[in-house]
Length: 280
Image 1: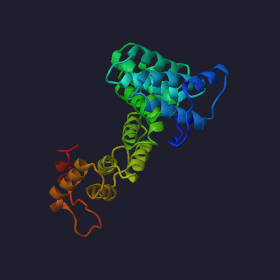
Image 2 (image 1 turned 180 degrees about the vertical axis):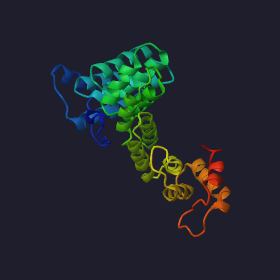
Image 3 (image 1 turned 90 degrees about the horizontal axis):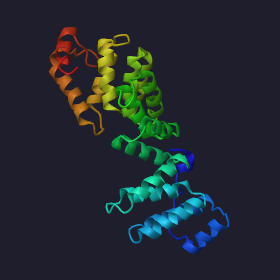
Image 4 (image 1 turned 90 degrees about the vertical axis):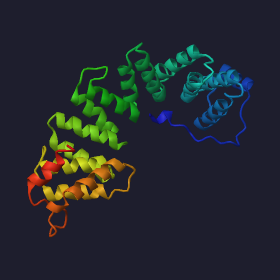
């Protein structure tokens, strides 16, 4: 989402302009400041359930007064309403917001529609939204290049977009790490996993354990690996499957663990590896 797409919180107590006043402002080529624009947009959007035609009319006028969000709100209202009031007009407005107003949310929504209907190049529209810092667009674009969905697989492109998105979500950080592994950049992949793990991502903690235990793309360090296994087993996040798996690995391997070690440590590599092979 670009800076210009971030809405200003509306003020419920503000007196709103009438439709006639808005029309006169448009005729006079006047512009409203950002706060007034968002207040008018919010008020017009609220009218949709009571009088959708008046709501859309006001949103169009507000758009002409300088609001990029107003056109997008009008398009979204028409396209998501269960009454199917005017889908054709909704699509026209969405395309206008995406192409002419460079509205990030409109670009992302249009990309999803094009992908579903297979009626256009949704990848190019996803790129426009991703270039405007839309995190979900960056994630979908990275996934598309990683898995070859709608494009030829390209791990370097996948890594590029997933790196940008990784600042926002742990899930993209994990896929970013996988893309780096495919590119042979194992040290950078470990760094990405470590960053996600420090954000308390159970999947990243578990992946760090496996990588460091087997020495996949890094030096093998069983003590360090087990610290992440223990941390994952004691996690307080909602990702119960990972915590349950970590606990199960510790329980089934308990006879092979050294009591003298400050962290669970295997006495023999084979004993733990035979168990871990079930989950790898």
